[in-house]
Length: 350
Image 1 (cartoon, one colour):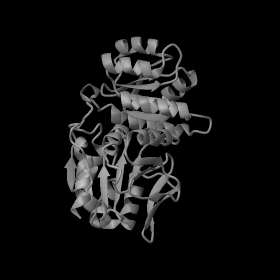
Image 2 (cartoon, rainbow, N blue to C red; image 1 turned 180 degrees about the horizontal axis):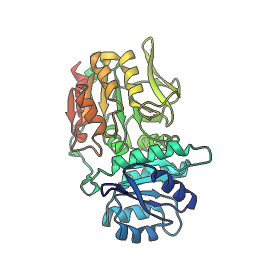
Image 3 (spheres, rainbow, N blue to C red; image 1 turned 180 degrees about the vertical axis):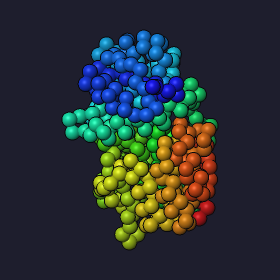
Image 4 (tube, rainbow, N blue to C red; image 1 turned 60 degrees about the vertical axis):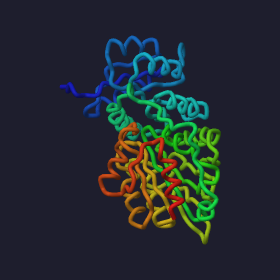
């Protein structure tokens, strides 16, 4: 017997196989009920009105009307939590990132012959549970006063050679990271980032940020140097660790077991930053579901790093910051629009 509290899901995808797989797998998950499927946005529109889903999974490359056009209309007239389902292609990943900027909350990879259906089911179910709690009607873009410029003084710059800023994010993190990173001046200390995102999507994400930021942003490769003016994004499906050789910081990109069901995992990055940068680091945990990053941020704080968490009001999902705050890992709880300046203020304090 289905519970009235079950999360009602509508699957929108032109592939009959994907609709069948998602329906079968999600039907095994407690607390989730697939109330319908649709092969295109026109059918989806009618079913949304009739069935009133709590969450929609949306393919973005469909006939009759593409997913982005549908998403724009949906967010304007009938906003709902949306999870994007995208193919692992350059085109697919770029469109998925555009969908996230339009209001979608999560993105997952469309299943392929080599993809584990079991893993996919677990991943999708977790994301559905997380986004179902989000009131997208009240989701607002938070901007600072455009007249306020963020700078890092030349005196502070002289002391940033051995500084590292480490950032972790998940659900809602692509837009939160954009908010933080595009405000950072070109002479900001090196930044290392873990954003929970499927393989290949991080390439397009880094390219998009690089076009918006003063700093140089790239998807990390094994051995890349972490230096002033550079942001390294952990590649999807790979953990990223900070290492040090003499005065040089660099990253180690590798696989390994999932941590908190994630690869890359924020905890893996933060714990390595605690080990190799210690009190010369600043840790920032942004919006996201689950507890990934909390223990790592605590490890950073315990060795003298300064730590920041995004506040609840500006988070899409307050899970990761909440868990970090709960265990005493956070020095400063800050609204998203002010995190960049707070981080640079902490750099200048030393």
